Length: 144
Image 1: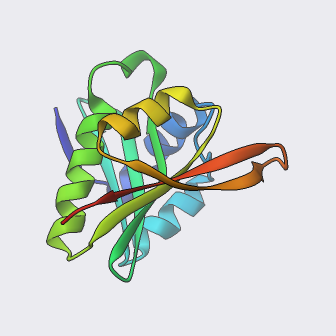
Image 2: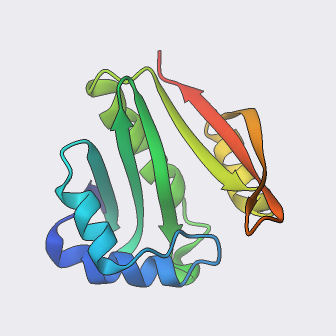
């Protein structure tokens, strides 16, 4: 069991994990591949004899913006998302980032609870951001 940087060979499994999650970005394999190729993006996977989950972020100046997090439904409740968040925080800190940020659908109560437990605080909202109906909750976690 380990968190590691994703490789191009992981993109199919990353895409499958995203597809299995109701609130994931569900990008195409090519979209995840483009992010993997960006120097300012980090795609980390939980590899346990296969990809069980992933986290994707992009560094913008001194901030790491989380773009997508997914854990396959059969593997939830085992601390995988927490481990991915912590691995990302370590990497962002080492890269000189001052904070992590994200946005989450207000209906995704499990993710909101996870982020709060991981030290993220609500810093704002984007009204009707999702499908012109549901708010995006903006959250930050300082790394200082």
